[in-house]
Amino acid sequence: QTFYRLVQSFAVVLFECYQMDDFSPAKNLMTMCFTYYYIGKPQTLPPECKEKAVGSIDSYLKSANSWLAEKKDIAERLLKNTKTENMKGFFGSFESKLRGPGVARKSEDGEEKPRERMQKSVSLYSPEEEEERNGEKIYLYMHLKQQPIWHTLRFWNAAFFDAVHCERRKRSPTTREKWCHMTQEERNDSLRFNENITFGQLGTFTHNMLAFGLNKKLCNDFLKKQAVIGNLDEEQYKLLSDHIDQMAAE
Figure: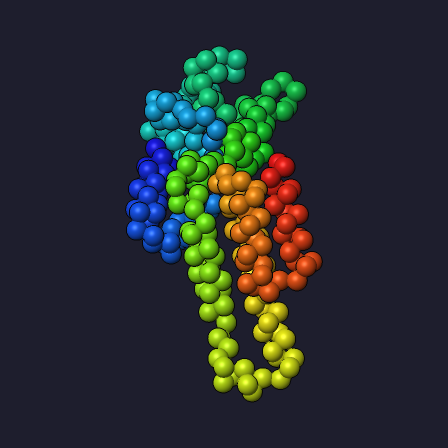
C-alpha cells in the first residue's frame, strides 16, 4: 500500500510538472522511477491479501522468538512430554523454531532431526534471496508509463541538457581563460571527457524512453539530434543505435 501511495504522489507531481513545463524536478522523479521498487507479483493483489502477505525470514523469526518469550516454560514442558509426530499439528509452523539446541530430542538412530529441519528451513537463504525467490522487482515506472510528460520531446531535450550539465559541473568547469592556457593534450582530454558524459547520458535516456513506451523512431530522432550536438563519433552513435534496436526488439 505504501508503494502505491508513492505511485499516486508521483503521478500528481509529474502532471503538475507537465502543466507548468517544469522539467528539472521531473527529471529527478524519472531517475527515482527506475530506482524504487518492491518485491512482489506483477498482478495487483486485493488489500486483504496484501495485509496477509508472508514476511521475510527475519520478521518470521522475530515473531517466533516473541511468542517463545511468553510461552517458554510451557513450550519446554510440552516438547519434553509430547511425541514428535504430534508436534506439527499443535504448534504448526513454529515447531522447527521451538526445538532449539537445548531441547532437541534425539531419535533412535542418534540424529537430531528437528534441529536439522530447523537449519534447513532457516539458513538456506538470506531474507533478500528469499524475497527474490518469491517474487520479482516491480518498479515505479511500470505504473507511470501513461504520464503525458514522458511523451513529449520537450521534456527529454530539457532533461538531457540538465543531466549533462550536472555531470560536467561535478568536474572543475573549463572556462575560456582556462582553455587558453591548456596544452593540446589537456584540451583533448577535456573534449573526450565531455563526449563520454554525453555518450553515457544518451544510453540512459534512450533506455528510459523505450521503457516508458516511446516508439523506436522517436528515440532514434532524439539520439541523432543529441549525438550531433554532443559531437559523438560514428562508433559511439552506432553503439547507441544498436542498443535502441535491441531494446525495441525485446
